[in-house]
Image 1 (cartoon, rainbow, N blue to C red):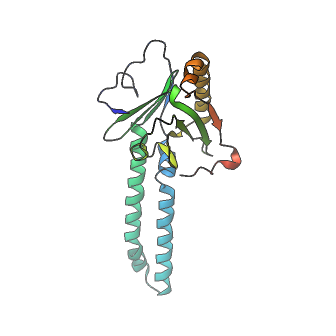
Image 2: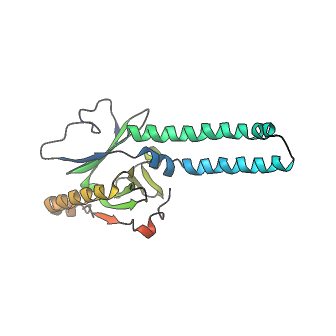
Image 3: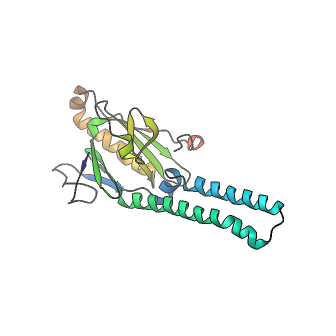
Length: 223
């Protein structure tokens, strides 16, 4: 992982070496990122409950409509600020994030104020999971080699929730996650066939992509 100032190729700090192909690039859908990583919907519901409770308490005292509005106005202002700030943060993070799959590695460009890049060769990928949600977006977390321990705090929200040891970097809230998983699985398979002996020698051979997103289990990996 490193900081960088120049991108000769979008989402990559340098040109791909000969023989390596760019297979896919994408970014989180900002609405899904804001909802699942920053919990915009839950925050909005929280403030809605506060408004209802305040109206119920004031109504029992028989106030006028003006006093009712005055009583909830400060809650509404806080709600707009909180939800707006979280939505803006989700949009900014999605806009500055680029996930990349090549024929040799996965790359994550993250960071709003300070762009950072994580380069993960396939030989360091032990396995990858797939989680698909009802809106068609999904998450693909990566279990890396034991020697690779990325920082959970630095990678959040591009990391599998509540998996601290070891942390698992993750393509988060990406559209058409199933198709992306197929591309990744094909790349891992081709890499294993081409470099299988070398990878097995280091005990770091990629194990492929596992489908964990059955319709009945779509909400089991909550953030």
